Length: 383
Ligand SMILES: Nc1ncnc2c1ncn2[C@@H]1O[C@H](COP(=O)(O)OP(=O)(O)O)[C@@H](O)[C@H]1O
Ligand SMILES: [Mg+2]
Image 1: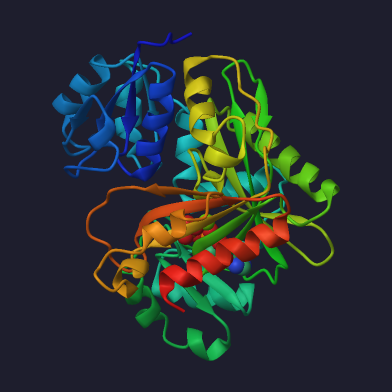
Image 2: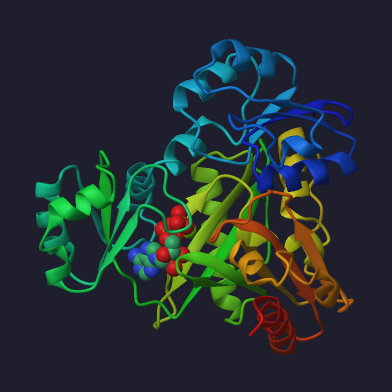
């Protein structure tokens, strides 16, 4: 057990790290953040922020020596870095989970080899091979770069064969990736996600399934409880637990799912860290995903994930700031609703598409809570 008062190291300095630290502070932990870019959202609330490149071995060693255990809020960390840090301090969720989840090819292979449900897919490693692969998968399909994609970045959806006529152009558009995954577009009737927390001894607990609404490939809203059958929610939780065990996760694993018309769930992707669709748990559950990650890596008992009230979480992207009259959204009007909980990440420049914060509305019934949340969002947008 890593006892309260110990120091937890976090790789990555974004908003997920910030919320992780804020949750861990309540339990009496201290935090050091390793993040290449300066004055990051997590660094602002940490005891120590180390800004150095992942190639800086001296800085990495100093970081590892200064903490009791290392966890992360960002999975795209070079494998060599994880291996090197692991020789000094435990790095959780663990190298297998990271190695697989940080690369779409490995992730897809893992799902297929484990017999888990996923969209049909193939790989391409050049503009020439892309053409054949796209034709084999058929239309509509989506091309995704194998490494470093998020919020729909590094993806192109192809609806008709004509859009695949110039594969050189597509390859260039994706900035000459080494590898891409081409997968069949799933005509789903909804997107959902389940987060599973797991301890080193295999103890697991899942959070209530979230129903997720995306706009332009970026998460817009999460609705909890998800408006689907109990049976589907149970299946989703079982899939998340199975993946957590197979990947030997110590920490969190978030699993994104598509629901098909016939009621089957298809796994879209996994993330071995807190997930945007789990932010509702900060206000809607007895224990948040962030606190649960701390409890998992510190090997403390889990807290209850019970949903206290129906909750709707809405993301605040930089676009909201651009619409605001004097550059600052009208927080006072939003907060005039006493059932709104606002979280801002203090990220500075509000670029379009950048995740700047979120709010959660708690209610007694999910449909009216969703209406209230969307009305608040429209008001912020000025529509
Ligand atoms: N095969 C697919 N079929 C249908 N929709 C998809 C498919 N792949 C991606 N999408 C849509 O694009 C969103 C982002 O894709 P995803 O693979 O989750 O990448 P990331 O979240 O890393 O940007 C998904 O949440 C979904 O809305
Ligand atoms: Mg995703």
